[in-house]
Amino acid sequence: VQLQASGGGLVQAGGSLRLSCAASGSIFSINDMGWYRQAPGKERELVAVITSGDSTRFADSVKGRFTISRDNAKNTVYLQMNSLKPEDTAVYYCNAEVNVRYSDTGSIRYGIDYWGKGTLVTVSS
Image 1 (cartoon, rainbow, N blue to C red):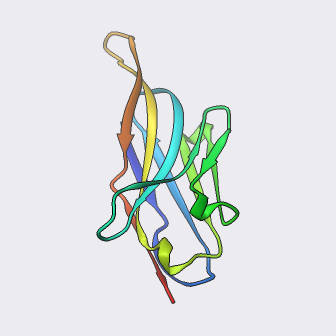
Image 2: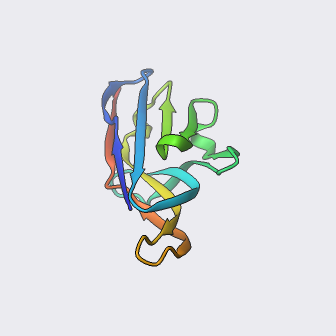
């Protein structure tokens, strides 16, 4: 299973960006999908998570500005980021908890955690 993130870039404060992350491979189904970020010199932190039932959770710092959604048919999660601030500058990583189907045996392994490589978001003041 691989996660491929896209959509990062440079934007001015107050602007918007939309991140996408597509999962591919031997996927039976996906549980939670989410976005994390890591700013220079800081630890990775949760930004937003969406469950398979479309429940969402956000970091306090992005509530009201960011939304998260998913397209289960495409195994893709999106992060719409509005009213961006310089403090949102970070590398954004997507994460998915995947139930993997092994084609050789037909067995399913549940709840394996996967990470994308990260996409850089830079917000200028």
